[in-house]
Image (cartoon, helix red, strand yellow):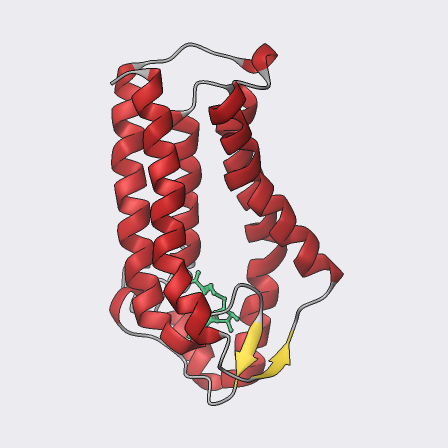
Length: 194
Ligand code: SAH
């Protein structure tokens, strides 16, 4: 494992994520939205997360900027990052497959929205966010730069903590007791052990 390969793995992670998401995003555009929690806060959170997981690290991979934040590269970190990246992509695939037409980039309720509580959603309420956490950890391990490496954890962390409670409130308003029961048997990003 070299720094160059490690950076390539990060780029492959971004491309892999885009390829998995593209088809679902295209299909979900056809599904009517009946209510939404979109607004300036959601837009700001999305932009922060997109910068942290994508823009900042990709600028670093292309230019080595910000140079002042360069740090040492350890091959073992690179390997570990590779395994986290594979796990993130595997989880993205499973979550998109399970959510299907109910997926949205933001907080929307679609016409005939179904509460998904099987597959990867059986024990975890927000497995897609678990996948983004895995991505952010992979990024910190793969990119030997304090700013670019940790931008993902910071950027996605802000989105996660700014959004997850509002998302659960929206799900509770939509699905009532079924979501309440679902919350009791699941964990947010780790399976809750019954
Ligand atoms: N938080 C989830 C989904 C992220 S996508 C995860 O991390 O896996 C965001 C959209 O998913 C929101 O618009 C919300 O309406 C929808 N959503 C969240 N949980 C859901 C569930 N269990 N079943 C169906 N839709 C869900």
